[in-house]
Length: 293
Image 1 (tube, rainbow, N blue to C red):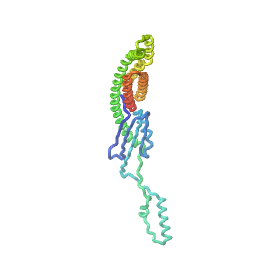
Image 2 (cartoon, rainbow, N blue to C red; image 1 turned 135 degrees about the vertical axis):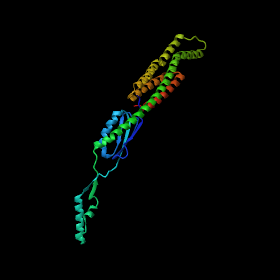
Image 3 (cartoon, rainbow, N blue to C red; image 1 turned 45 degrees about the vertical axis):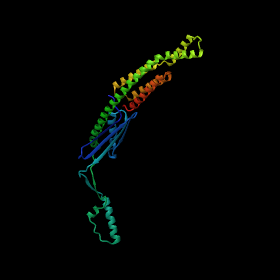
Image 4 (cartoon, one colour; image 1 turned 120 degrees about the horizontal axis):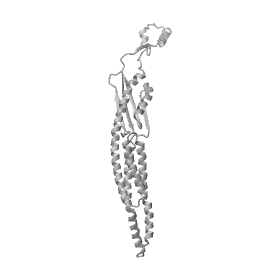
């Protein structure tokens, strides 16, 4: 199965839960697996567990994970008194009473109303309890991403294989032309010499020697054979599936190398144009391969 690196995943738990979590993930192409997690500080200790889950599903891509949390209190908080702060308030009031000679009518209720004397403290959930809520959301988001990667990967595979057929047909045309290059060059030399020598006998041996030299310099048999081999190797790699992005990228580089060599040896305009078409298709495939896992 061929997978793309572009994908998106989302999941959230049901409304009405004590803690409402939502998880969103997106990924784009990258040479390696690069995971970036954004989450509330209160659960930052779970980041390593999240990365382990992602590593078990994905092998390449720049992955951004966003975890949002909403808490709904059920009124289970506990009231706690800050007795030292209450004493401090009381002492301040006593000092005001003595220095300003005012009647002291302070009550417990009045002191309790001062800031931070009595606080409501919510009981904190354990990290393990929260992890049991978040973990299935992470898995669900990863499954969504994985399915999207498979769908996009198959589309990329289909398009690349079609382009390989186009390249293969062009290579066959180049192969046909390559057989005619020596004869065409021979006729070109003979006509040129005929014009220059104006009736003087031509040394056929010398012409044959020149033809042999140009035929050797312009021979592209090896390059065509290797190019065909690379095309076949790409098809085999697609059939193998799995994490094939880097391997395909290497094969594309080798295909481009052979095309450049053929272009450098070409002395025929039609062959040169064919090579240009091949390089154009190779570049399009390269762009698509960059997005395969």
